Length: 310
Image 1 (cartoon, one colour):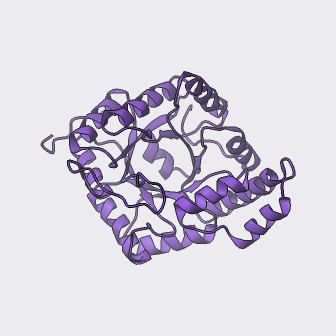
Image 2 (image 1 turned 30 degrees about the vertical axis):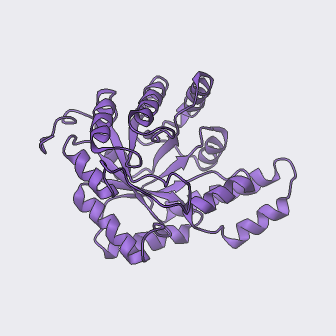
C-alpha cells in the first residue's frame, strides 16, 4: 500500500464538522443483522430514527467467522443502512481474527461503498469479557497499528475507542490515557467511549486525556437503559459497576411491566443532559438495533443532528 493516500480526497468531512459544531452531534451505532428478516427490521429502525437527522451512523464489525466473513456482513449492513439514511456512514474495523491482508481488503470494500469514516478497534476477545485476546498470526496486535494502516489508504476521519474506566489490560488509568494519546499521534481524529454510566467518569477521562496531550474530540457512548438484565451485560463488558442510586432504583422497580424502563430512561436522559453540560461534542447511542428508547431520549432533550439532512 506504500503509504500513499489512495482514497478519501474528495469525500465529505461531515463527521469532523459535526463534532466541531456548536450544536451537539448525534450518532447511532448498529450491528449487522443475521438474516434477511433482521435486515428488514434494521432498516425500519434506522428509518424510524431518521427524523432525528443523525450526523453519522456506524455499523459494527460483524460477529462470526474470521477473515472476509465478518467484513462481508458489515459491508452488507453498511450498504443496507445507506438505503434508508442520509447520515454519514462510519465503518468499524477490528483486528480480532483478521490478517493484515483481510484488513486491507475490508478497508477497500468500505471505501468503495462510500463510507465517510472508520472506527479502528482491536476487538473483543473471542471468549467474551475476561477472556484472553489473541491476535491473528498474520494480523496486528494493537488498535494504534490499525490507525496507521488506515492512514496509508485514506484521508477520511478515523475514530478510536476510549475507556472511561480503563482498558481491561491497561496496568493503570494513566497508561490507558497514554495509549489514547498514541492513537491520536498515529492519526486518529476522534474517540468514542465505551458505555458510560456517569458524567463523573467522563469528566475524569477528559482530565486524564488532557494531561497526556489528547486534543481530539471524545464522544461519550450511551446505551439507553431499558432493563436490569441488559445493564448486567454492560457491566461485564465495560468493567464498571452501576452507580449505586441507579442500581437501587432498578431493584425497587422490580418486575413491574415498564417500571425498569421508566427508571432507566429517566437516568439516561439526565446523564445525557449532564454530559452535554460538561461540554461533550455530541452523544453516540449504542442502539442494539432498536429505536424507541433512543428516540425518546433525543425527543425529551430536543436533540437533533447538527448537519445531516441539511
